[in-house]
Length: 384
Image 1 (cartoon, rainbow, N blue to C red):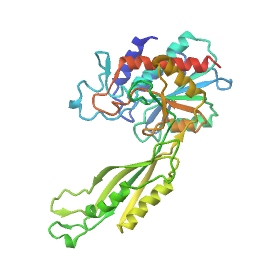
Image 2 (cartoon, rainbow, N blue to C red):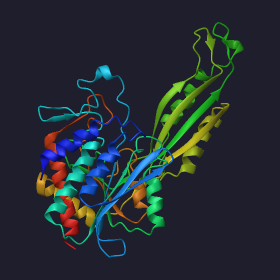
Image 3 (cartoon, helix red, strand yellow):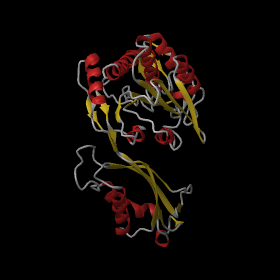
Image 4 (cartoon, rainbow, N blue to C red):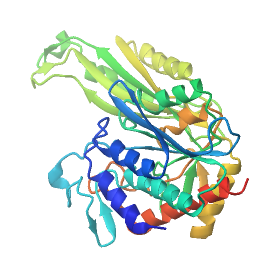
């Protein structure tokens, strides 16, 4: 395995300030890398989002096993640059640690996938099968013009994908200790409770919506969402993400309070039921309110099959332990590929530093991840 090329590629990607959904030069770097390996590379732009679809090996009309790697080049904003020990887009290596925004989520995994494929092709130039990549620049943002649009195009072309590895940071304490084959859905709500503005010294002449909402919030946070336990997913849960009133005057009560929340729901709790439960709570408390809803993702689950077995064995080969199969965490683009009837597994770096200041990846983990990816390719493609 060419680990020097791996580190160099990871650094080049991290050095691009590709805050979602600006790919900066990441897609060009990746396209050039794959073209040198004789991949068929197609850049697919939808509105302001650039995506990359590439494949190597047998043509679509030939019957062969296709393994797809999915990733994204966009990262979240680094925030206050003064809080970083090293510049977030430096890609600096110090004491065998690669520093920078995206090192874990997920430019490190992207580099690991690409180098794994390069080494596999170099060692097995006449393999029978197909290795493919789908890389977006809008996973951390709205996601509406990213992987989902590429998948729609692939379905229209009658593309067939047998297996898919998503490089999201799935591991917890050790690389490979957790792999994922599904995620809960995500429903976002913005609740507005209406009151009447007034002077704080005369509360009898106003209705403070902040005071009105407090008893209802207690009921909301203590709601049992699942009427039946899910065997596939964690329980449905709600998190309040913001409460504000747009009132900057300390002697005036606001006319309205706005509450943002997110519900992560499983297969035993429908969207309609979530909306009904929440409406019942605020109706019961006789609050004048309205809610704007946005569905970010439906739950998805990929039944374990050949890919799962190969991934488990590859991790056992290098790590000498068996990974846990989970459906925890946030949403991922694996849900779009699952619609194609593809077996999907998420396997990536440890997730302890995702979206944090001073994000980094240990070079030992980066090298190990690339080696595991290469073994997965070999065990799926060469053993047919």
